Image 1 (spheres, rainbow, N blue to C red):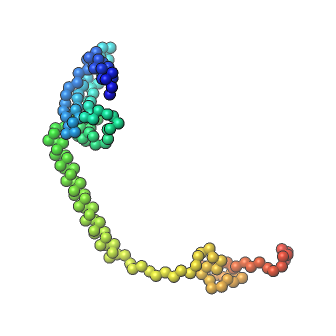
Image 2: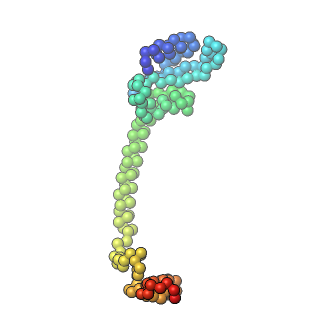
Length: 169
């Protein structure tokens, strides 16, 4: 935020009767403010605001996780009261415990699945390569001129051009 924008914002707050109330600071250094509902100089009712002033003032440096989830819930009005430092520390400890438990579970599951896969897998089968399916006589010893059929399978006969150049029969 440039100095002119900061000056304009301070002047606007002075004229609009907007009063920031300090609510708290998180462990990252971000400051949180509450602006109660008020009427501006035109008589319009302006609803309450919840504001965060980032410790790192550059907007381009913002990343997910720069605001703790408890404070973000307060900013987005999903909770009515701002979080306490004890609550934030308790929730952080709980998140670390969950991460450790999920890591242990993942490693145990990986070992179990490796053991069971080795037990359940059948030994590899030796296959015999007979040729490619697009070959003119795939699966047959020699091509025959007449088509053959044995129940459900049908093998078309192979076509051989005649020696004569006449197309008439």
